[in-house]
Length: 267
Image (cartoon, rainbow, N blue to C red; front, side, top):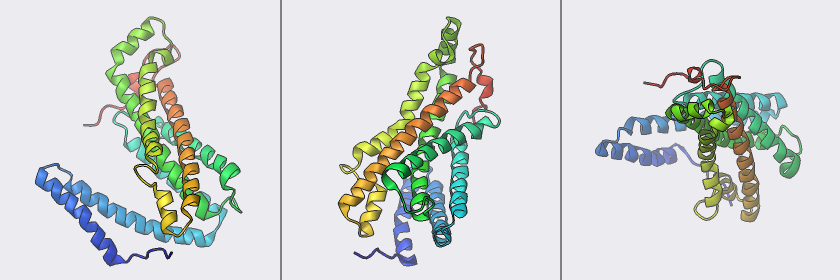
């Protein structure tokens, strides 16, 4: 089976669906027409640019180039986590906590996959490392951002109850236990849904890409299973670490709630 080669006309034809969605938004007054247009344009420009960059990275096959690409991806993901918070932590914590937990979870999951199931000929093989880091990073980024956002909103909403528990002698993690569990659950729902629906409701992107490229469907399924398990592990590690780190930051050594360490709500 030959891989499909799409040209500008094919991309333009597919964009009709995005334009139709924008038109539907206008007709229904949803206020999403501009968002659809901008998102579609960003998708086309970003992925086209990434395609050219990946060509160069694959041709170079240098460990330094591959590590630099991974660092750029992690930096961009860190900025995305911070941007998605309605009540982010103040100062360097805004980027530092989400970025550190996300990067650590990604490195651990990718390293585990490398040492066990994947085992490429060279560890810096760009055709393995770059896509794998991108897949894991995107999943952990979403989980961490949802978890941190959920905790920030929950402690603000439940401030009186949390302070009452602290006044009765509860420790910081006991008093914030409910909001923390809720935030962690919310962060992990997307990957759990993805695992539950895989194969039954949808064919995941990695498996679909391999099948379209001519790979054996069973082999593609095995690779997708391993990838989903890596995503689950990385998402759980990153979300738990981020939420516990935020809860620690939002209290002090005397077990007092410190909402002054949260930035004010966005207008």
